[in-house]
Structures are given as structure tokens and as C-alpha cells.
Length: 416
Image 1: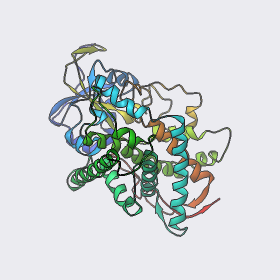
Image 2: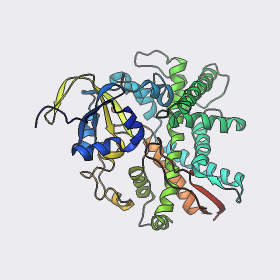
Image 3: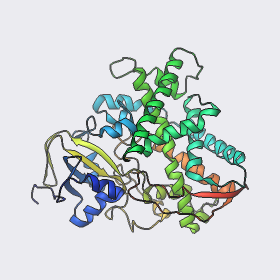
Image 4: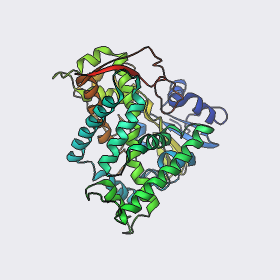
């Protein structure tokens, strides 16, 4: 094998990324018959990787860094400036530990309880004759859950406004024009909100239990022992609340999967021979969530005979890796029972990134995601019935995040 990485010929492919979205890397993998290729995005040479072997390389912290990788438009909307996603080495490990200390069994049980409480409260308030969009409803339910769990005060009259602001953060990074600038404005407003909360907790203007995340983050220190500045502490609090709220995308896909695969929905009705978690994991594997992870090479090195130069922008295909034929049997089929006895590695199933939780860049909130999705599935299947009106269930692969066009409408709901 030569040292030259296969090339995606042509000029800058930024517009192709926007046009093809989740399928950009997947399309070229098939055309070039390779799991690694070179292209140009945003005016610079970019290496694209897919599959578990590519993921294992991508999450090698000795070969890749995150500190200068994410585009500014992503920092200005999705991640926030100075957040954990853009850190490396000891600084990243120290900051990540703040999040990992929250992921204990007691927290997971509380999140499960809160999700069920707020789903029931939402449908009780809506009334059975109202048609709701599951995607939009989930934003409200999850934001309530996230704020109560973290200890962030949330007044009844501001819930819808805050839900819009938070959802703008994950709906706008790949958008152009007005939608993107809407995301930037919402980032500024969300930062201001959370900075005020952090300041009020520090000055004891609001009373918060010491076991709540907002208390811990307001007093968190960096790896040098210095108190985190108010702006950074606020960004990290939003790095809890924003990805939790983004699980509303997967709630919409839960609704879509139940509609597209009704036999699988029937199996979910409290049977001992079918696990809700299989269904959830297959939703996370089968449907798109976030398309790529981004990093830069941190050294010159060779991999599989290919030459990598330090400082090269690199994209890992999250969606394509979860469908890679080397890692998955019949990846185009929706088969929850594939997860029966399945052996996960840090690199073959990466809907929220790969690598290790503690030292790598895999999302610390993956545990929370699974708990919230399980509570939602169990509630929708085993605690209530509903009808599904005529609607457009299609979604676009260049719409990031991809959500069914009519946001999964349901009506005539009644508790069992």
C-alpha cells in the first residue's frame, strides 16, 4: 500500500457536505472503496475516516487533538467557547471528571423518575383532543427534567422560551443564514441566563442542594486549582442541559420507529423476552443523530501505510460507522435483537462519540441518554395509548439534526 491517502477529486467540498449531510462520507466511502480519504472542506485539506478501525485511530489522544479543531460556527452555537469538547490532555481529563462524578446509579434513578413525572404532567395538561408533536413535547419534558436534576431554577413562565433557546444550540450549527444567526443569538442569551444562575449560587442568592450539578459546577476548579470563571462554568452547565435536551431528536426517532416497525413496538409491551434497551440502542444505531466528530492530527505518523501530517483537519463518520458492514450484520435493517449478547467496543458503536469515558472524548451523558430514552419508551408503550394521524414521516439527510418533517404527531392519547 502506498503512503498516499485516496483523494476525493475536485474543488472544495463544503457545499457538498451541506447538500449531502450525514451521507457525505458514506457516499465517498462507497465510490472510492475506502475507509479513509482526503478531501477539502472550508478551504483546507481534510481527512475523513469511517468504521471501527478509523474510530480507534481517531480517539488515539497521542495522535489527535481537539483544541483547535471545531469550526467557529460550532463553538458559537453547539459547544460554547471554552467547553470540555475543545480541551486535551490533563485539562480535558480534569474537566471531564466533573461530568463523570454525576453519572451514578442514584442520578440515573432520579432522571428516570423525573422523565416519567414530566411526561405524565405534559399529557395531562395538553388534553386528549390536542394533536402534539412528539419532538417539541420532548424538548419541554427533558428541559424540565434536566433543570430539576441539575438544580437550575426554571420558572413556569420561561419554560417555552428556554426550550427554544436550548434547541437552537443544536439545531443551528450546520444551518446557513438566518437560522445560524438565530443559534448565535440563543447561545448568547443562554450563556447570560446560566452565568446569572452560577453567580446567584456563588453569592447564595438562591438555595441549592450541595449534591446538585449547578452547586458543584459553581464551585469547580481547573487543574491548577483556580476557580472556574463564571463564563466557563456556565458553558459547562449548558453542556449538561443542551445535550440532554437534544435527546428530543431521538424521542422523535422513537416515535418514527414505532410507526415504521409496529411489530417491534408490540414486543415492547412488558415482555421478558425482549429488552427495551435493545430497541433503544437500535434506534441510536439506525437513525441519524450527529454526523461527524472533528479533530486535528497532533503529530506526523503512519497508519495502515498512509502518511498523516500534523495539524490536518480530520472528520470521523459517526453515522456511517454505526452502519459499517465490517462491524454490523445487515446494517440497513432495523433489528433490535442484534443487541442480544452483542459485544460493544469503544469504537464500533459511536452515536455519541467513541473512545473511553474517563480519558477519551466519548460523551459522558450517554448514560443519561439511555435512561431518558428507556423511560420515554416505557411510558409511551406501557402507560398510555395514542393515535397517529396522517402526516409526513420523511426526513432529509442534509437537515442536521434530522427530524421527521411533521415532528411525529400523535393525538387521542389516554392513560392505560
